[in-house]
Amino acid sequence: MKNFSCTSCGHKIYFENALCLTCSHALGFDAGELSLIAMAADAGDSALYHRVGTGQSKIGLEGQVRYCANASYGVCNWLTPAHDASRFCPACDLNRTIPNLSEPGSLAAWRDLEHAKKRLVYSLLRFGLPLDSGTTGSGRLTFDFARNTTIGHLDGVISIDIMEADAVERERQRLLFGEPYRSLLGHLRHESGHFFWKVLVEDAGRHDNFRAIFGDERQDYSLALDRHHGMGPPHDWQARHVSAYASSHPWEDWAETWAHYLHMVDALDTAEAEGMEPRANAISFGATWPFQRNDIYRDETFDALMTRWVPLTIAMNSMSRSLGHHDFYPFVITDASTHKLAFVHTVIREGRRG
Image (tube, rainbow, N blue to C red; front, side, top):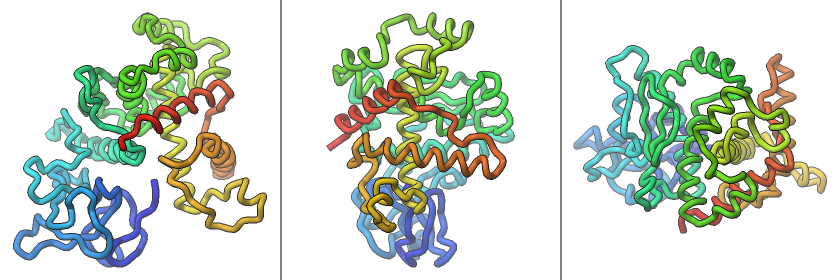
């Protein structure tokens, strides 16, 4: 996630902010510009705003705008045009089911889920990936957030149990399944991988290339998951997969690798924005910060990503240990996993919108 500056006063602001604490202007996220903008309320209607400061919108938000309808619940700071009849932003418009807000704890859970989902949608927009497959099989990427539902993906619909927003329950599940890492954003990235397998592999006719790297996805999926949960992963799974669960079936291998790639890109983008990532190559040549920046979502080569990623993970783990915690990044990327990550990198670059 890159940093943002208030378009009114220039001070640093953050993705989830709805108010600049320096100049007190309202802030809203313009999905076309992929940036936060400062706004002032219109005198005639306090629900309508106009942008102040620099910058122009790419989706017709130059005039009056309004917050997404879900802003009234404190779960969204994205914008819609004033004339938009739906009044939902591009991210909230993907929701099919939201939690029952009359139940205790549902609103807080939904807020956490929306924050994670919007980071996912932001990344997908940065990549230039379509949120609609354009086919009858998967259709549009859609979200169901409900209590006591099964986490998964089916025909474009990602279902998340809102209990995953509870830190205690999430830790219990992490220990139950023996996972080194479990988060809301990780769930959403993983499940979005199943949607984009349909878009970027199946619909694009990349079956042969996929099977050469991940294996044949035509093997029985239910039997493969039953075998994994009953017998556990193979003893040598770490040599070929980014996680134990990735060894259960080629579809899960793809989804875990997809999520891992999104983790990498977003973390590197954040590290660069925060000035935390003095690149090894630049240091060796005596360069000083800041180094030349590429759009990591669209322009960086895969080899450059990996060259930057490994030193950053070592630094993160060292910092975590210095603070008395376990490794922040509990993964080992082998040559086989690197090959799979490179495949994800390639299909994203080739499958993005013009």
